[in-house]
Length: 250
Image 1 (cartoon, rainbow, N blue to C red):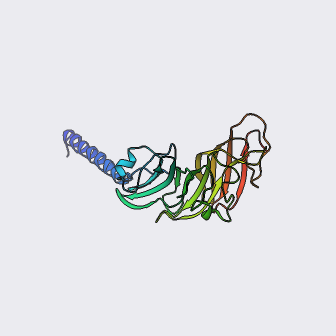
Image 2: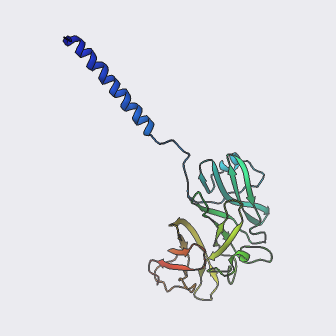
Image 3: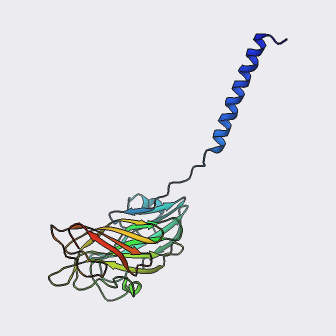
């Protein structure tokens, strides 16, 4: 016969074993920790060069998207006292994979200030333009897209949305995104605030000055005070806008 004292010791040991097994099961089921993925980043443009290290560029706190140990940064190079050119760079584990400074090399005062990346093959960059100048700019990528150029006039800052190959930084295609003055038809200012992607369409949320464009690129009819919070939903290839909306505009 087993004494009550021996039974107590037996059940105590059994309980400890159950707890240890349960703890082991929980530990084994816990997912491994990965670096945080940052899909979208839009902010103030910062200056850097292709010769800068990732640590140097990261410290500037400019727009950046990342997946695991890979990060892509966007900004500008100050090429003269009154001219900026956009720059985009990718690092893998701190080692430069590619750097592109050839998207716009004219006297247009262009910068890069936004990115969206799904961590795979879908990468969009947001750039600024202040007018069309002689030479290579985003117009060569925008032929056949929703808006193929800056338009009439110069000075107001507008946006360029570019679809980029994340493997080498090559721009596949791009579109301009701007406002249009109803008085003289000249281009007016537009600033991108947010990008989102649903697998087929790119939604671009912006601040648009008088007057936002409809899906047909013409000026919308607006009431109220400028600027407007304007949203355009692009097809993934940037050939069309599926919908365009702004409060008090139609």
